[in-house]
Length: 298
Image (cartoon, rainbow, N blue to C red; front, top):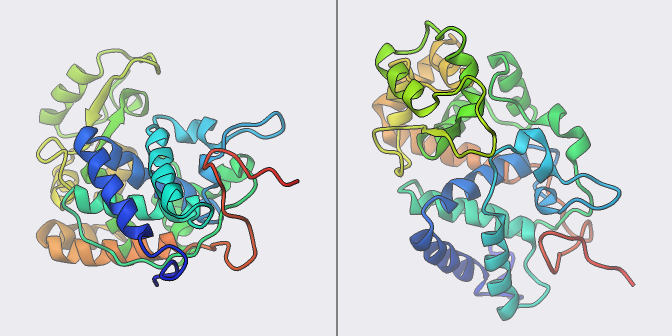
């Protein structure tokens, strides 16, 4: 805890303040910050490899199919610049990525989670192994549970982390296979009408911003409404639907639907474990000067 106490005592406050200001201007940034945590930390290490741009030799993780719809990376650069003005070369992009996700959850009405710092930044993209680590939205529940278990996250932890789908939106590209050519009979018919209205094309244009909000009731609030929705067959993604029907996960879904406190407690625990996945510490890695490129070594 408090890794930067001596080297940059303002670090966490600067990040928190930047998140607050950016969130006020662009509410959707908070969803992006939260998604960053999963996409960076679940792939081998919380080392901000996600943020590296493509080079002639390496494809960026940001360009990978699994990163479809990820955006707002420029706001992390704003936060990094603010931190650099105060303490140049001290605070890693990996810590900024994790802490902005933490503070984004608070901005959305979720729990405050105290976190350790001192992660260092990786020097290579992990795009080529990304699919071996990151569970996809249409994977079987067994695969999803296995991938998270490999990071030390148990079943209630997985159920809680998927509660992130209480905010944000799902692009039609990820939904149309449940609507066309036939509507998935598992979907709540009342919800289907809304989904068809939002996603009118069987083959949506990936560049067009066609999407359905994950939680129509409280789309901007991080709460347990997601669990009530999926029990009512209003889960948008296959994984949402499976969470509410698989006998391994359903008991926790029901418990979280009843108790927001229980959801927050399990979410905080799982978020912490995810944020500490295999970090680079000590002399491993580096502290990037710019989050989208490795430092030039002379």
